[in-house]
Image 1 (cartoon, one colour):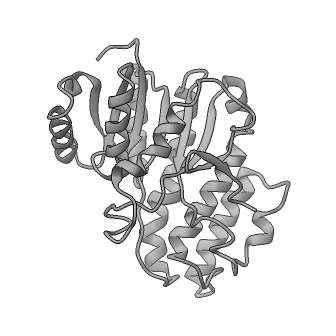
Image 2 (cartoon, one colour; image 1 turned 120 degrees about the vertical axis):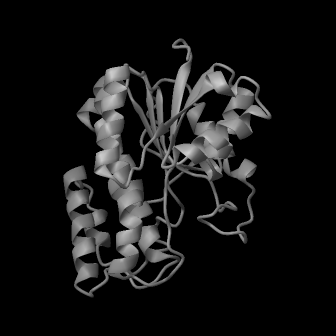
Length: 280
């Protein structure tokens, strides 16, 4: 693969919004290359073959690599590959996600949701930061469901809204959430798919806090949260109103923002290609 073009890494991108975002960016940005990170190499290679039908150069622009962000072992193996191969990743798009479509707040639902949606996303991000070049980007795909409007009865709300909140305190709050659920005292009881929604609320806070971290500021790394909308995917279901192509619009917009920190955008949440205050 060429090394002069910007490399966009997207997790969970052999299908759904991640795959649609690769397609959208391939159409508009011939200078971009892509690292398609997938749990199944077989499905990843099949996705590239699918891309070749529309983009004859997909074989040279898209590289597939195994990565399961719910596994620390898989993350560490990926990080070691980035180091040893000296792969320069210009943009990390944390797209991989998981949801159980239920209003139940149980240990089982939590154990299925948190490893990918929160813990894996944060672990991968933090292990990638030292490897990202200056003026790179970190984009985390989140959701408008990760809001206090949706989780109005969240008993952890005051701790999360503390103006002096730190990433370490956020991690402690997430640990307390999990402990309360295990103890049969769920900190939320209402909201649309509340366990999934809480993971996205935590990530929305994480993005705003990460933007102010020393390592991020020193390297001029851009940090954003992005909501693609309610899109017809395996995760969201067929009743969702938006097509995959429509769901790729906002992620593509954020990837294409100028490659320089702009304080009015840094650490912000984007929906419909506009900044919204999701944590109000």
